[in-house]
Length: 84
Image 1 (cartoon, rainbow, N blue to C red):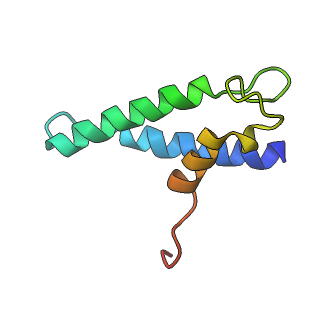
Image 2 (cartoon, rainbow, N blue to C red):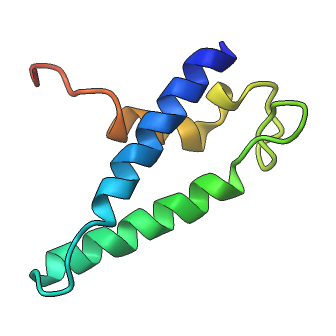
Image 3 (cartoon, rainbow, N blue to C red):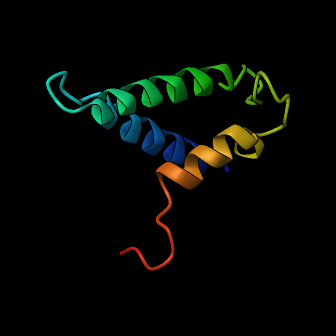
């Protein structure tokens, strides 16, 4: 299961890194996207894993059971039904 979570986590970080590419000359929505991306990165760092592989905040046995990571994977990695 750890290998799967590592793949999902890498996908979430790639998505968030893509938000950071917004340029300052773009409309305010791009600035908002940068702020939201930074906020998500901070939240996910707070829910990083410890040496035993559990979420340091939730104290769950596996990072995939952390609800913060579940939401991140659901929104940033999985595709909604009907979206190719």
